[in-house]
Image 1 (cartoon, rainbow, N blue to C red):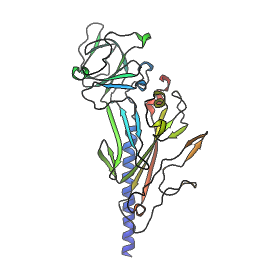
Image 2: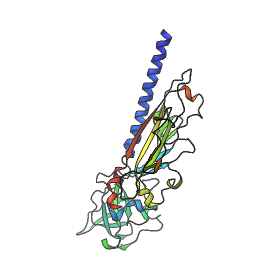
Image 3: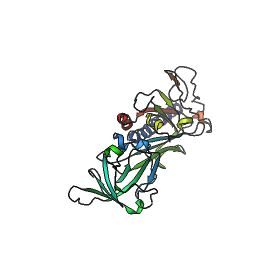
Length: 329
């Protein structure tokens, strides 16, 4: 009797731990993925940074640089995926202002409202090249002028350099500047039964992460027509039209109980029946002629994998900054 009750206690405790770990992992991914694209001036047609196919980093405070709000790296076979999210931390939301002139590392702009010393700043004219720079100073303006001084150390390494002198007027693809505040690039991945955020553990007992893009028919449409893995045409987002069609990400996180049962207690996913049984994500779907198969969750490479209990946590994360900016695409 004692052994029976102790076994039930261990199962209950392990299940509670799995529930907690999975909920923490899902909340961590959800919180930051919702911010994807924040501060990127997506609402301004002339500055839309989703058009950038060449991103030049002249910032002295940021590491890598890309203007694609979210990228999924598909794991080989049934291996876990990785999700990279990019966003800014500006209190003003990264409002774009026109750059009227550039003299060396000094920009003359219509307004430097929302910019602070140490901010990262993106300069773009809606074309295929964007520049990431660092704000070094905001001098007291002379009459009818407003300036932003850039950090010359990183700025001098840019090749090619941004245009100089008096810059185009609004009718001629104006150059625009947007202060992001702190530029952040965050990657979620799974390794050694842990969910990692930029290599640091945020939840234990996590053995799988699967993600898919929710895509629309066109850049200006917000209705999701299909869910796709980051493979084939969607393995690379160098195509600007393709990246604008991504309106959501759906995520499945697999948490495992730390306690091994003496007998098998879990089964492989079976999508052939409705509802699916075993350790599965969402169900395979086909809507409007578009197939949206679920990602494969295969844990069989681990020893005695079926002697452990699992819980799959799922959610859909709308990329609200991209959805709200559809009119500028």
